[in-house]
Length: 426
Image (tube, rainbow, N blue to C red):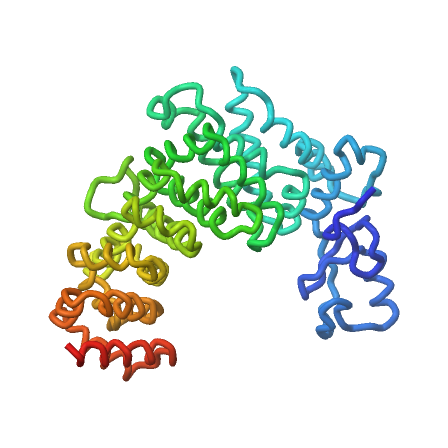
């Protein structure tokens, strides 16, 4: 039996029998750490932090429950942990808790009367477990929960999405999406992200588009986070090209960047702003790949990004947030302006050059995206006399001088000087 490393005591390297936690946050098997302390040591074996008099051992019940659940799966049923002394009420509660295997089976059961309610309950338990414990998340990832959760989100709908958004199926979809996001590995190199390749199927991609178009703000933000992961993960490179080439994805994604129309469904402003920021980051991640840029330009990404930047610079987002993705938007415009088609799109976009100028230097801002704004302007102005005139009329010289006096990086200053030199040659 292969024991997950998170279930092994760092002293004995064997499976925990009675996990306890020191004041340093490190967990050990009780017999091992008691022997360590009895030998006169007053440091944490892993961190070597001094313990002083703080040698109390706190039972790690969450970890114990996870190990019990793991051991209760069919392939491990012949292994058991010895029972420590525990109150009767706690033992009764443990007996009522389903194992991870049972939760997974519940989520995999076919749709039927009562199945939706059971899945909602199981998903809430998964969400709680994932939020309370790193060990819980790791265990569920290892047991294959991510593909199951994504299947619940992107299954082929039995009825039109407009008829399902408010029902039990919609609740399952939203909860499954949040659970999947909670279990997503943080490393782009993780092979576990290969489960996102479920979107290669036409039915799953159609389901994603429908949710982007009609889902609530939180759901749309979550889907955009998945698209960002698809664009950056090593295991989904082929899928990233499929997504970038899909007109339906762009038609559903780009409207989320805009703030001049009604939301697809009523939602709090913060949810809508979160969806907008997540959409910007997804678009930026897609545009970071050179093969995807042609499709992005063709489907209107340049205009949508510049529109978002104009809105962010207008101050309308000050009360509700929503401007947190400005550096990503500027980075995407810079990437798209690297091609002739992208530069033409920027130059032709109404107010596009002016929007970039406003982000060269902004008071009360960290100016994280200044380098991208200057680089995009430099690329466009080199080829377009009209863009140079528009930039000059928008006050770019003053903005550049303010930027040069700021604490921005050396590369941003070098590009600012190049743009000033170009404008002086007009």
